Image (tube, rainbow, N blue to C red; front, side, top):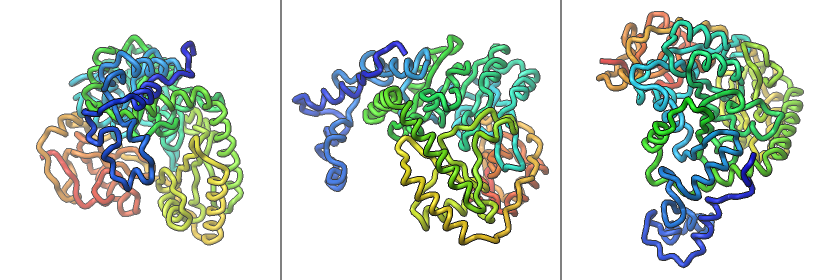
Length: 485
């Protein structure tokens, strides 16, 4: 780091503006907090609303920054080790869409992991790109999506040498890391651009106990949800570029298209302050979080019927590492799904976890996590164990995924085509206009533009009868599906 990371230029400029003798005659309509509902100000105070300003004298323009926002973005690039960084106020979804649209166009090929976030599908729809899906490894024993085998990327590249880019999702919701350095080397050998969706991993740059981030592993574009694990406000993210392979003019234009033209000043300020916080305190805060998680894991593993997955499973299914700042817990030996466990924790103990699937819950122990939080979770798990002893364990997930469906059209072509809703019973052979993702393992069985083969239909029908959670269908059940007309 070469810049003065103690500076918070955007925050300082906003604070200075609120202290000026200003007559507000600009948007937003509450006029620096004058017309906020008193129910809100009685609880939250008035100062924060005075700071809800943007694009006024001295506060710069997110879409054309040349002042304090540009300075704040340069500090972020310096902090994360990027060549250039951009503040995002529409979430990492808009960052992913912008990144994809900046490297592939209509008819061009991009290699995408089958377990990508739905925002990647949106990026394919908007860009008109042709996806070639690569499959991560899946552990039937664990019921978990593993890492992406670099050899799989090499194989897909050999079959699709025209591919212009590869997108990786690292870490996953469960904290799984793939070998990003090897994947970056393969992508660059083939002349491609490597995009890493690092929504859950922007904090790892500030403590060496954590895995290496994408920017340190050769990625060209990295998108990050700063709000998820680095303390900014919800919806605020960053996009980092670390390569001269990326057309920055095109990227800036795409960011203008996907970002708000009236961006929230509060979100922008929170990114400036989150960067400052991570640089100045991230090392010690993440050290504390690391030890909190280690304590929680040790105690929960002592509880009958509970188990933990963490970086000890590295090496299985091409898992290079696991993010150590989260608790991934299973009570399947008590016969409880992750959904069951989540419902018990919130309903009976007031503990709201981040994510659940058929086998696991994911508990985020964020920057503000405390020992009291962990003790409350541990005590709840002990009570749950005592009340469910003797239950039959859940069956292991051993359902082989169907073969890749035929891609009849691109996701964009399926999106713009006329569609109709048909009964699931009548869906065989039709081209899907939506994505259906069974959990576990969380890999789409069908994506927009793909034909619903007999094998796919029978697989999803069986998953439904087993009670598997199906993302992407109304109500989670296979009654109807939207297909190309």
